[in-house]
Image (cartoon, rainbow, N blue to C red; front, side, top):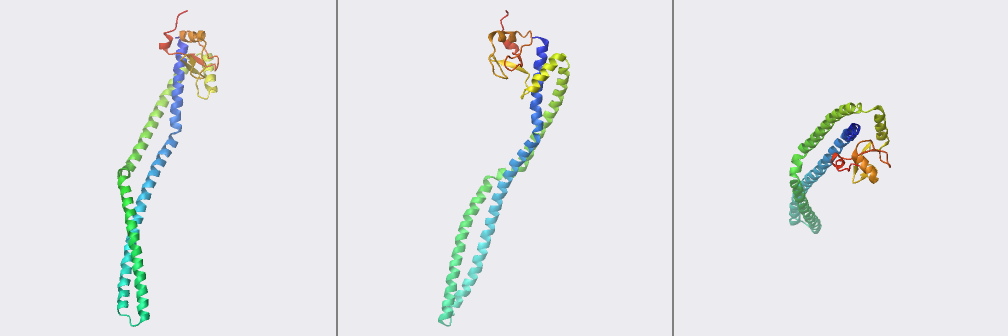
Amino acid sequence: MIADLDKLIDLQQTDTNLRRLKKILDGSAESRAAIEKEFASQASAIREIQERRDSLHAKRADLEKQIAENKTYLERAERNLKHAQNSKEYETAMRETDALQKAIAGFETQIVEAMEAVEAADQEVADRSEEIASHDSKLAAAIAELDASVASAQSEFGTQTEHRKAAFVTLSPQLASVYDRLAQRSRDGIAVAEVVNGSCSACFMALRPQMLLEVKRADQIITCESCTRILYVTKKDASEATVA
């Protein structure tokens, strides 16, 4: 393989890696926001369950208080009923007694319903107890993992940038210009494309047999007839080329 082609392949691999690293770095803020949003959503769901459970406990306590108060009124109404002096007092006490008994029965029904709802909420909280207990630590771990990934990408980006500078200056001005032109016009930044299964991996155009043989020989720069990218094969594939 000619030295210039080796340099171009190395440069392309470096540029591809730099694009990958830049994508990680540019998206780091969005990735952090996505993590925080996910955990905030989990926390909100947990709070909603806990608040619903607490509200049900408060409702049950209020119902029990109302039952106690109404039982006190019922005792008074029953006394009035026993000591009624005339039919009017008797009817009034009877109506009051009936109303209070119905109210107490209604409150008791509501308490049963509230207790069932409390049990369900308590069970839901219990089922998510591990999630609740580890929420903050998992959030911190996820953020730490992202920060480590970004720091690693930042370090590698710097190293790869320096490597690119050193590699690029070894190209002839003409070849450097060709490489830049091909890379800049390509949306994916690919100027040097590997031949895979007899086709250009960038545009997927099948190579003519003679061209494929010339690419395998790797003794000159060959460009794709479809997309004009510079073509190469791996050393393993190149070793299989037949010498004309």
